Image (tube, rainbow, N blue to C red; front, side, top):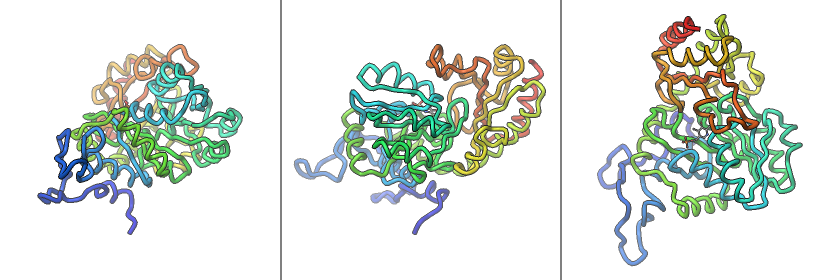
Length: 379
Ligand SMILES: *Cc1c(COP(=O)(O)O)cnc(C)c1O
């Protein structure tokens, strides 16, 4: 029997505890496991290698993304770093040119020193991706929607371009979550998440995940997960699992609220530009309608008053907390250039210093609009 994703979010990976019948997966707060005989055990020997709470989370995430396998990590960056260990010196990675600041930093400031070549390309243009492929390209890496410009790339169009060259396609699906977009079903080889964001959803845990179908590549990544050891603890896995159960409801409310707020901002005289995949003014609106099941909860905008006005608004909102991160139940506001994307300053990926990014929470849309309306009177 196949289930809808909303049902999987509640049930996948959930087995009543065999010893007690506990309905919720216990937090197996243990580092080691008693063995019945020398090297004879129940599948768990040491918690860097495997832990039952982590197994439950991995099973749930694989089901949500429609993948065969999932591995979770101590952070989104740890997940990305572990995937990049599949790439060898002399190989080339083609990355989108609008990616999370920490991803750019890892590629450009860490991994480039180990003989891996990176180029940064506008992946909203599939022909630009095809033109930038090199004979040694092993991985095409993209975010869609991107952080912070919310650009959309055509996963189904780019997958065959990567595959024609024998390269993998990795998609950072953090902004959409599996409720709004399932890249593996569109041809991607890896889906990567910062589960810190929508999947966890409550701003109380940091984590990352990789979901894939290829069993041989999974075995290598599982080896790397254990060899490198950037694994999450059982409490973190429990919190993330707990978040997943309401992911479907939350994504609906994030999208519902964000669409109303984007329309409010677009009509406001102080606002010069609103970037939101759910507005028909978005350059990839048609693609977003086709590729995603909803526009999501992230909005970026630019004010006529530029950086000074942007700072004034970010300081003034009450419900929108001035903070980094995104995807939680509560609304957040930030300026990417000096905050989340400071690591791309003075690079080709540098962000407009006046750009404001909001993560729209699940509060009532009218209260959020009133908060922004009040803050905009200060510019
Ligand atoms: C936050 C984020 C990451 C990094 O994840 P952490 O959990 O903070 O390590 C990667 N990609 C995107 C799109 C993000 O928003």
